[in-house]
Length: 158
Image (cartoon, rainbow, N blue to C red):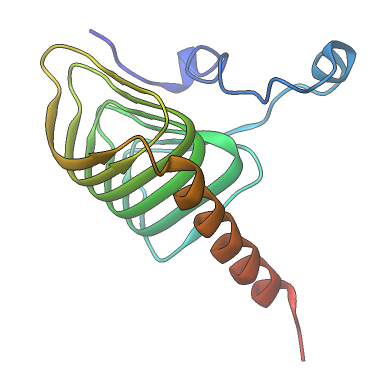
C-alpha cells in the first residue's frame, strides 16, 4: 500500500525542490522535513520553511511557500493548504493551492477547491472539487502575499 510514513519521507519531496538551486547547495544543506504524527491535532495556522508530512489532524491554514506538503494516509486537513507541491494520500476538505504540482494518490479524498498548474490523479482517488489549472499563478501569488503578511505580523513584537 502507498503509505506515507517517516520511513519513506525522502521520496515524497524528491521532485519538489525548486529547480533553480545549485547542485552543491543541495548537497551541502540537506532538506528538513517535519512529521505531524497520527496523535497530533492542530487547530490554527501552520507556517513552515521546510517540508511537512501530516499524518495527524489539522484544522486551519497550512502555508509552505517554498516547500512541499504531504497529507499521509492517516492525515486529515480541514482548511487551506498552500505549498510548492502537495501530495494527498489522506483526507482534505477545503482548498489546496500548489504552485508546481498537486498529486492525489489512490487513497486520497479531496472535497473543495484545487488550484495547480499540474495535476496527477491516481485511480481510486476521490475528487469532489472545483479544479482550476489556468489561474494557478495568480492564486499562488495571492497566497504568497497573504503568507508574507501573516509571517510579518507574527514576527512583530510591541
